[in-house]
Image (cartoon, rainbow, N blue to C red):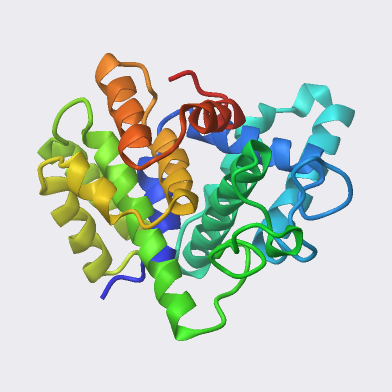
Length: 266
């Protein structure tokens, strides 16, 4: 059985849109500037949120941006920095990358919902997050139910990225072969590669997919992941993303905020 949490990182390395590094960089830079999980910032996470992988990635981004500012002739841009953070391969790092991506997407959801006023942490009297005081992905699962929820979210993120790639036409055999080959290079096992191959071969059914998404928190993560999978440079891709947001219950204003966070025009 595929480990979907690990597979998120492997798939993203294998099939991310060319501008995906820059989009991830926009998110991480925004989190760093807002003090997410730390001091300051309008959309702070509860104490301890984003620790571990996300906290380490934010520290690396902060250090990388500082070095770039001090050595502008050596700076490759934020996209190059993110490429070095997320572009590693092999089974020894794919789980860490997957965890970092999921933490990043959970933080996008948390900020989007807090900024829209639609959900707050329990301490402020709002609905609880999937992990209690913060979204799963920003905290380690503590129960078998939370472990299953994390795996289900990871599976939906993968389906979302694959569906987005299908949105302007089917994924051709050569592209499937390339993606599966890249997955093998990143250490994905046979079950994981076969699962991805089967999903790529399935016809796109947005209504059925949207029905699988359990709540707005996960819908935002799926939408943000989809923005990493395609360039959003065709009418078909833009139409798909508008429909994904509408059918999964993301309000138009929240979708616009996510687009802004990633630096994408849809």
